[in-house]
Image (tube, rainbow, N blue to C red):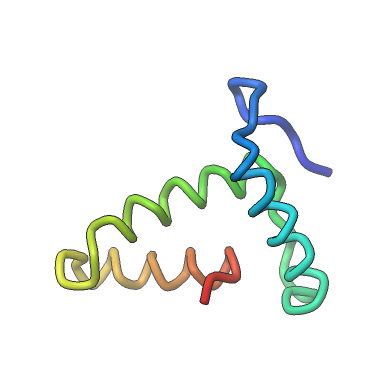
Length: 76
């Protein structure tokens, strides 16, 4: 179902968030494809980079992508 990241190691905090994501997916995301661990990690890295920019620094495209990432990751 999920695959290990290229490094073969997963940060325990990321793994915990992935398990929480899977739990939320069962309830909220039944109609969407569940992300594999590697996909989740890549999306989380992208989300964190966009989040770090802040609302005022993101352009319209980045804001749309940030919202899409937040939705896919079930972030509030």
